Image (spheres, rainbow, N blue to C red):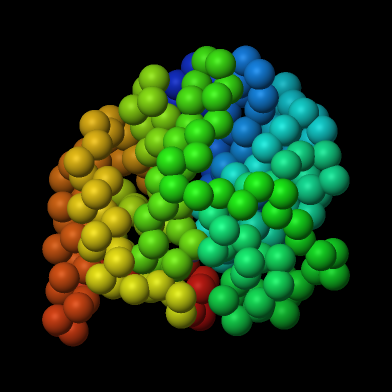
Length: 240
Ligand SMILES: [Zn+2]
């Protein structure tokens, strides 16, 4: 098992590659057939990601598929280093925004700009499945944080990669321009019907109490709908 302060192998061949500062975490699934990276983080943290991949024995070209949980810059920024070798996958609502390079919705800031056109090869739909042999990943469309947000469910270990949709403790993320609190509540309510053992979010800690955290997220979102004060929202850098 690989474990240091940047990488934790939570399940055999599933690695948490921790993001730094505003950059999202990445997760690497070393599959029997294909290797999948969930989210690439910000462009300027790419060398850190590359080092983490090397530590788990993978070169850049060994990553076969990059799945983006949604279209925000802190999750897609390093895609450009992978897109000539790997297939880039995102929900179709995220894919349109990524490929059109709509910098209002991807929340790019001047320091994050890169001049390479971003590609999306696989435009995902709800229930699309990646069969990796040892693991099987299902796309769950979870609009709310943004319209193109997805979570990825792994069947064997019953874990859910959540992007910015659910965080440990049920803290809400900021609801993006294309997002909706109503959709968010529906998405989490649907997720809550699944058997989930652990949540692996795009920022912060992982959660070993998914049921509790999803309930809290729904309560927080309802409070936000009612415009109550004091609802805890994590902004990371998206609104700064
Ligand atoms: Zn986001």
